[in-house]
Length: 415
Image 1 (cartoon, one colour):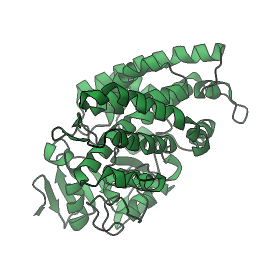
Image 2: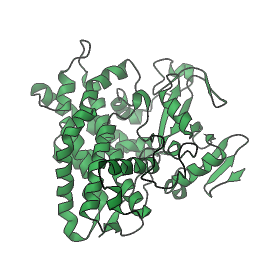
Image 3: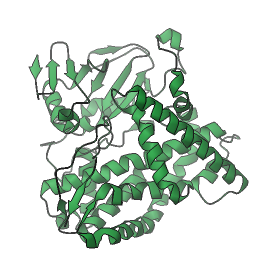
Image 4: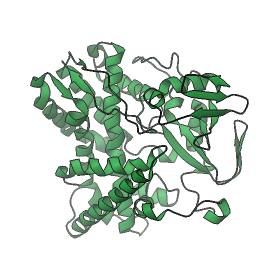
């Protein structure tokens, strides 16, 4: 049994790990644990989660694309066949909101839904939003520049992604604060060791969120506008329109995914840059250096750490045998630190030119909002550091207890 670091216990013979995901020693600095796992047991059975986890870059990259695995399982087998419990009544509204989520379905349903929304998120359409993002970022900086200090998440990072995704979909911007509240409660369902209270809060948020989206759908059906929601409502795919339930699930996942991870990533990126001690003028000298800086912050400070998949048939990976109905987890953030792919992987190197990071996933479930998230980061980070060149941490930031997401509680800055 190896003990590396204090929070981690590794039985290399069994390829088993003991690790409390709610221990601040882990979620505050997961990269240190991932480095230890790479060194001693990169693919392992996590005892507390009762599931196999993969951290090697090549395994994670391949499993994200492997059609022997999927995001759903009940399309190929029943609960009874797989020995799965029945759905919980107290999260029925959450389950209903997730039923047609792009993140949770497989082809052909996934293909039909993604085809309808993909056009709005391709780079050539997203690039048109650049002036809006620049204006929004600079307008927010105008509000706090003279103060000499700010809490960046509430004054900046929270506002930009939710405003932009709301505009794109066609949700009124004044709903931004409420969307954030619903989203924060909603994603509680994805936390490790979630409590019943977390589940009840997520279920209530899902109901309120769904009821609200249903009213906006009715408005757009009666009076279409030039927005993504109107496009989804009125565009046919092979002779079929989306149902209200499909529209609600799709809208919720786009709103949540369109801002939750980007909020975390803005905070993570600013912290990584400030901790590095590298002059911001060097990091954001031009478009190329800015892009490399953004990609390196995504690699070393990914906002979403885990993506799970079901084995759809018997399969063996790295000597580990899975039967149909087994769930596997891929640690995207750990794959980004694989020493077989990245030299000195725990070090921030903005001029790095190695493998692409896996922070947005891969395969058919590659993050549909990646072009928008990348554009936002490539605009807001240089805007912030160029406007506030003396930016520094006012105090050491605390990481949120929301694993498997990774973000800060708050980010207090001075200049």
